[in-house]
Length: 451
Ligand SMILES: *[C@@H]1O[C@H](CO)[C@@H](O)[C@H](O)[C@H]1NC(C)=O
Ligand SMILES: *[C@@H]1O[C@H](CO)[C@@H](O)[C@H](O)[C@H]1NC(C)=O
Ligand SMILES: *[C@@H]1O[C@H](CO)[C@@H](O)[C@H](O)[C@H]1NC(C)=O
Ligand SMILES: *[C@@H]1O[C@H](CO)[C@@H](O)[C@H](O)[C@H]1NC(C)=O
Ligand SMILES: *[C@@H]1O[C@H](CO)[C@@H](O)[C@H](O)[C@H]1NC(C)=O
Ligand SMILES: *[C@@H]1O[C@H](CO)[C@@H](O)[C@H](O)[C@H]1NC(C)=O
Ligand SMILES: *[C@@H]1O[C@H](CO)[C@@H](O)[C@H](O)[C@H]1NC(C)=O
Ligand SMILES: *[C@@H]1O[C@H](CO)[C@@H](O)[C@H](O)[C@H]1NC(C)=O
Ligand SMILES: *[C@@H]1O[C@H](CO)[C@@H](O)[C@H](O)[C@H]1NC(C)=O
Ligand SMILES: *[C@@H]1O[C@H](CO)[C@@H](O)[C@H](O)[C@H]1NC(C)=O
Ligand SMILES: *[C@@H]1O[C@H](CO)[C@@H](O)[C@H](O)[C@H]1NC(C)=O
Image (cartoon, rainbow, N blue to C red; front, side, top):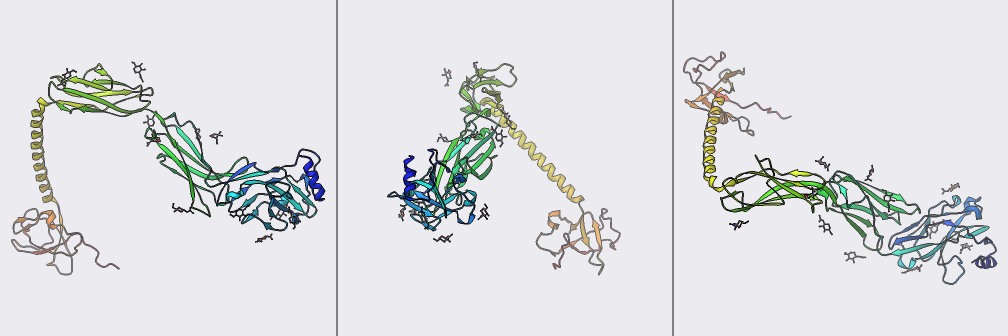
């Protein structure tokens, strides 16, 4: 290898040659994977010990493809900053400030034929140096797989906080991928940012944190990254992870086969249903209200109904974490069904009576209610007369009839009002005996002028 720089020295007298076999390196990742139709940003810093950067105006960067000996056949100088020439690429841009030894470069619109080794070279009017370590750019038509990182998702205890992260390579930070999550738990909180990795390449990092619920057991959470591309459709890459939550029995309930009302002599099966994880070593215990001891063990309780079988049953489901007791469920003997029908009839009758009483009380209350009346016989001055009840030709006017329709304002009701009733406590009405008055009964006055 040491022969090679010597040869270069022969042809290019300005070339700096290190006699030592330890070459001066530029700080480049050894490999980067680019997406075709997108750009690729190469993080780069170079060692300034071999070159003097005093004249900041005239420091130029050069990128050489395939081999650092650019005079060799097949080698292409893809970018010469000194002459400002780009070859084989549509555009190459050095972002870094070369006089500060920063040579970060963006190669735009990369294509599959760009997959190769690239060397960085720095040129000043009197010094040139090609760094010996290349970066291998690998151009792919599909994005790199996503990286999921999480705390053991297979054994998450209920209510514990779960951290899940998804990262997508961003070889072109100017057009980073967008990350989206699907089928996320309700309590999920997500933060997403562009992050620099130790080799200075970038990635979009999305962090999700949530409290595991038993509802999340077997939930398949997906992370999707969408990469914008110039030459073709956006490409997406997705990854899914299944969550497994450990939890004590939940939603414990009983089902009865064939039905909750059975006749003596039939076989009945009560099944205790429960959600739990783990559920393979569940223990079920059966109880009946009023009996101290358990009836049986096992998921199902089967028995032939006898006269004493009626009553309230409940079960207890237990796994290694905890237990849960179901609601009580009633088993009714079909014999006693006629009794129940009798009860239903009795209750219905009672309800009817209750309804009638309520109606009666309501009528009484309405009688006692007050309405406002405007005395139209008194011109100009509006006087409000408080009356406790109104009779139209002796017939009772219900409160509903007097109530104004909400949308119509000035609907006038004319009624023959008998003020001779002792409940009339009005001193303002100058009524005499059985005199008939036409009263304009109004609902609550509405503002008419709507300026
Ligand atoms: C870059 O261009 C300059 C000016 O034309 C030239 O002197 C130099 O040799 C070129 N560098 C390479 C590596 O071709
Ligand atoms: C280099 O050339 C491109 C066109 O190929 C031009 O847009 C750009 O301004 C030039 N840069 C310099 C520093 O001359
Ligand atoms: C890659 O192919 C395109 C045409 O498809 C061509 O213009 C370009 O020069 C090629 N680049 C390299 C580095 O071979
Ligand atoms: C690059 O850095 C030098 C100092 O080392 C500074 O003078 C110059 O303005 C910088 N150039 C740019 C484009 O920031
Ligand atoms: C996963 O996250 C842990 C800390 O949460 C970290 O130590 C580890 O390096 C991460 N692994 C990867 C591949 O990012
Ligand atoms: C988890 O939280 C819920 C609601 O706060 C609670 O009902 C349940 O018992 C908790 N589970 C465990 C295993 O602590
Ligand atoms: C999850 O992350 C939070 C902070 O983001 C941390 O407090 C918690 O300990 C993490 N949980 C686990 C299980 O790593
Ligand atoms: C999640 O995916 C697995 C395997 O792909 C499947 O067996 C499971 O039923 C899925 N979970 C849900 C809740 O759909
Ligand atoms: C984009 O996607 C559409 C439909 O999926 C397809 O018909 C079309 O050929 C694609 N275009 C390119 C450039 O891949
Ligand atoms: C009820 O079950 C018992 C035994 O479990 C069986 O001998 C009997 O024939 C069953 N009766 C009916 C009506 O299915
Ligand atoms: C269920 O009962 C069996 C036998 O009585 C016992 O060995 C086992 O530990 C029990 N399991 C649980 C989860 O309580």
